Image (cartoon, rainbow, N blue to C red; front, side):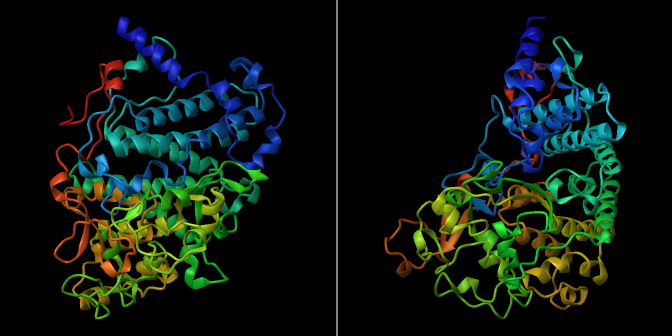
Length: 562
């Protein structure tokens, strides 16, 4: 009984009173701010007085948007083999321990609690049913989002679909199965899909809000994750989920509404400008779910300082990522089918020659505009790999130490590449026509040749590997993409224990000679294989925090975590 009281007190403090939280939270969307200004004395808000009008319900829904991931959040790209920071990463190198507490756990349950509160309060309000359905649909989207994040990390988790008070039995709920969690996710997303308008029917003033298409895109993402996870980890019914991913992605493609971003002033560099302020806003039909920051200091939602983070080495590319980019003829840098464009490097610029243009728009090369008006020079300042990230970097933002460039949480390119992957995973093949309506649109925007079955056959390539490669380079260094890909494909045990390698070192290019360890080929060793590991019996799921196990004796720790 003592433990139960303590657990309840802690959980109640953790989630607090949502009515007060919502009233004081920052409003995420500028289009809503005028409706919310000067309506309430926030110091006088109580739960009983709050849930009365549509404005109240809007505020409750707006609070959920504060849980969307920010740009560069957690530096999650460093969990994979594609990137590292200025030090070792315990997720990437397998050195982490069971934590006492974890924001990945508590934060997602806070979002679930907030979503459940909106759902319950909405049903008690005397409003038009269409209004209640709309905001309930937004809440169910966010509940699905939170459970998707929990599923990827921890597997089956306690399923909480209503709010709880002191002594509630749900405070000691056991873990649900993977299937139960996935079914809840699908149910919530299907409700959102049925009760929200298509993106094409939304107004520019609603840009950034959840609509039917956002819910469809999240369903594609999570169904592809679960389908491939179950296929390669040999559990469940992978075809069920892959079929869902394929069909929903096909529905989105078939509308013809979404388009890959094209920067008319410089089409060849559209991929670069996709991650600059030029791609902000409603007119960019690649933006499915953006995290908004505003326009400028006079029209601000929040801000970030990501260019400074990049300059200071928060995320730096590795050798493995750079080697993944093809040459402009569609052939790789390594292997028996190596491109005839390949030549041994004589400087740090050599490896950028005749490569997929996205490489030079993702990774800094000598001569690029850098900080203080200077041109970039190879360096080891704030980087152990010798590389620095160009994607999202902006020299003006670096100088001003503030940026309003949006974070692309979900973009249309992901739907296209997910469709191609789901088709291949289901059928073991993919037609050229399906490639042309999906993956090849992404390659065309980048300035790369089409991927065809004949090309793959003629050059003894593997179609699945090329589909996966396209995903890797298109989403390079954009948060968690690569990490969850290697988890669901069950290749983390192969790629993460490798030594972390960086740039090929040419001493004459450095004004100050760094102290670096090199491979026989001259590549920088940022972390040796001796300090990296991945336990396939343990590390495909994350450990539950000790505090949560103590609060809920019915929770069971994931296998092999002690």
